[in-house]
Image (cartoon, rainbow, N blue to C red):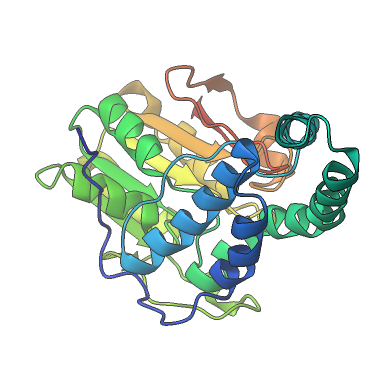
Length: 276
């Protein structure tokens, strides 16, 4: 049975996807090398899906690995088991282009940020797993950015009460800002807590910036107001890494959400945590 794709809206509907076009010659060159061909096709599908308004698939490690190189060798030997001249020639053409392919695949997140303003990778499997965890309970996402996570949850469960807020400070960053993909109310994190914390049982905080201590202010507020007596805070980010403040990570009590796998496709190790 074909999987039904979750849509978050119209997407950007760009007529030219530079990243996709970069991958086309690699798709042709490595079509016989299954692991590399699959990574290339997945990367192409991701940008197509987001451009058309669909949540993208989950991703494996996108950088070229030693296992990929071993598979490349095996493919060459299988095609030319007794013809060393032709085998070596094909091998050289494949291996020479591998660093360029590795660089393009490793730049996927940068492209998603610059073109779609998607910082944390929001895939359909992630949203479906998170939806099961939330179990139709009312939710507030703070620092929601462009709203990809909320948009996915709203598409998954249209009757569920899902609020999203953001102060839009990220628009000052040196990227081209695009419109939010769902309704996101312009409020700071603390303003959101004052207004909505008593209406929800879960607060989501994904990819909080590492350039401020707003996340620590949130945690202090929730503790001060005994919010954890009836609610839960779920954080998605890289511990002591690309997201959130050092103060937050040092003071937060973390329990990893083991029921949701968040395999990282690049060097950023994103995970889900219950925080209190």
